[in-house]
Image (cartoon, rainbow, N blue to C red; front, side, top):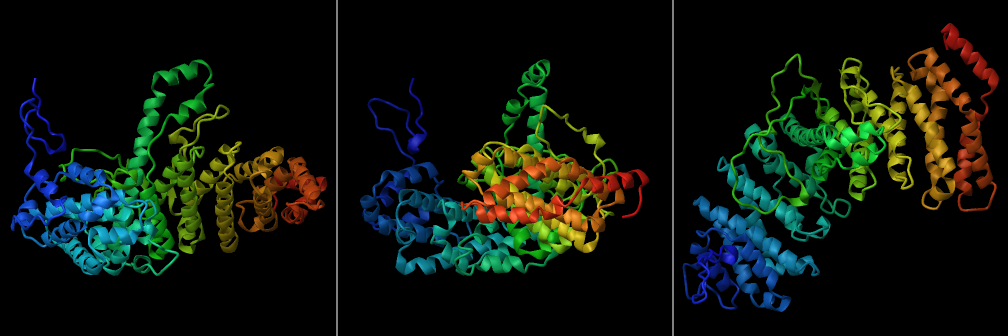
Length: 614
């Protein structure tokens, strides 16, 4: 039977005797790809073109099929198409505007795909010509800014953001995208902020706006003055910052929900029943199959907000109900290029207004809690390089938070207690904690729990040294705040001490393997310094005298581990080798611990019995 050919713009039923017909827009594209000006024979060519539905696949495929020499021959026609697209953005007829936006997306992506090996300047020349580039980009950015700020069609705004995202993400390295110089000069920062501060716009376009802002902030951020960095750092409008925080929170919440759904589905499946029968022998392997695509784009946005804008720190603690996210059908938007960075934004109904009804049965949450839960999932599996980088970014964000004075104030606030259900890696030697048994505690306890969990679960051959260093740094910064402000945190410190000592034992038992790749003495020194801090200043921030006594008991109980560490670093510090200086620093740091004796233990054990004062 004859079939209708819809690929490549063909319209006629396939037949042996007749050639298939093509869509009119495809015929017009073919004229553009000739060397002659298509408007010579048809004066209304450009007006008619933007009334035709765009065939993205054909246009991009045609660009891809040409070699460099052929592309240069039609450069004038491509320049002309680009300029007419920009002119069409000012038209009142929305169909022309939509088609112009989609054509620009196809042009930008198609030319970049064809010219990956060439410089950014050659691509600018191919798209619009050097002599007209500045004016073209000025007009383009002004048109996009007007469309984003106007009270017009939400579909048009969506396409504008998609075009901008296409423009920004078309190269692998954003700093090599020379066209973005014009985006720096002709800023759309205010338009992005307007979307985030206006609830209806934020629900529809908040995700794309936040991702776009995060990407623009990273353009040559260490090489030149980036106006988006400067402007983001001084934003103090509460509605805008809260809007940005809400978009990030909902995107992270959606990821957490998807992971939880997959986890529950996995646990209720056949494999779960089988592992229970054989004593959970393969529980680690089973867990690795639970995989949800991480969202680095939104994580990058959170980092830039926390790192650049001190006012955003207050948004982390903004309370809102932790409600189940629903997914209802959303009206389809016009066809656009694929979402950049391989991330899928939450549906618009998910990014709802922050003013949600409070309910006594609904657990109160905030952006920081959502982020901690997200981090507890991402940091479970660092064997994959993609997740390793994602976990590193999570720890960098936590470091920024732990360094901030205001953030520390609400982290340690006894009046702000939350029940934070962190995800824990399944392990054969421990049971999964029941959600209902979780106590309400200050948020800093959840941060410490997350750090302890990471320390305990990542002692492996592919040792993530960088992540461990950042993890210990977070703990150190939190302790510095507690010492400075004399905050007596009621926390199970013994778990942290035990995790740190086990980490030292792991470093010593794998000395040869680890030293071939890492300077383990940097990490060992940080751990010893943490214990020195507890020993020297513990009486100022540990919650009770018995906690201080337990510290002494734990150190002396595990004295063999510290003795072994001392022997190892002494051996390497007395040899004229690569690690002499690094090992000698650890040797000096162990002085406090080595001075402890059995009589100290007896004294503290007696105090544990009598509950005396320090």
